[in-house]
Image (tube, rainbow, N blue to C red):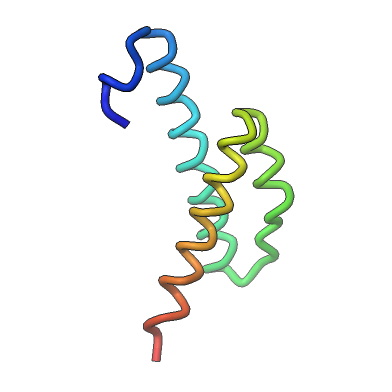
Length: 75
């Protein structure tokens, strides 16, 4: 997202907060997968939901992208 997408500075801060939250949640997911523990996807999606419906969709996309990357190259 570019600064031009959000003319109001308050909306820019909200977007940055949601982006940081999604990055942290994805980091939690990656850590859990690396440690061979249960990823608890529903809990992560629920936490993403605190930032709106769009954040849930973005979190699903991030998890799917991560899994697609991992499926492609560890032979």
